[in-house]
Length: 362
Image (cartoon, rainbow, N blue to C red; front, side, top):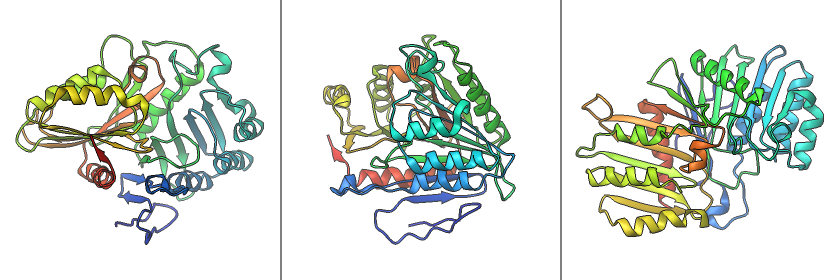
């Protein structure tokens, strides 16, 4: 079990067998939680939400916090957002819908006009740009008390009780990533519906490429990235995906398995994934394997293979809010990111292998 020092708050030492994992270096911090639902326990793992609280508490007066998420059902975070505003932080937040929960009401009262609710402005929709829903899960911090700037937190998690398996990826000191997310946030805040919005942006290092949805031009960004994988001896594609209903992605992965890549999929044990299980049982490819896991909510892909113009294996992570569904591609407000970095890859690989221990092979 690895323990790392977060750059402004705590040294984590974990002695509980199913506690969360945190991995950190100068550029990134990656965190994973392990709630008790997998083990038949009514226990949450607050690892990820604790980190958001820590960041909010570390914002000085005059700094800015931007966020976008589907909903808020977490009183601590709602209170910390309000406290930050009261001490002079410019807090601006976007929600998909007004769910009338007590936490949502608290946030509305505390943030006032600084809270934008997509469904209030675009009738019958919960998206700010897309015609589907705002499925984003990110925070931006302009500055922290220790002098750190341009902090971006991309999560798989909604702001709710942590009973599902999730991850956070925190970008430190990357002005290009921060600027791209901030531009996207302002586009969301304009509340101008456009299912053809799709944009990309690059980061400062590690071949970071950000994809901002919706995209409804007939293309599929994930499918295009998978098409760049050149399967060779030892090539692997390991996936943890909460919801998988997109036949285009399935066909591309099956093609990669037929070309010699080992394709390993963890998905959520959920009726919405029954179609995926049927596809899998019909395909019968030796190098294509599927497992299910209760309460999986992460959405990431790990590639260890020659990719694009490189003949040597590349270690690549794709992660964000984006499920493998047509809605994520065509109608939702979403983000997914490509990062080509060994440290990030190995951190996510540790999580994938840990989850696979408890998954059921189909």
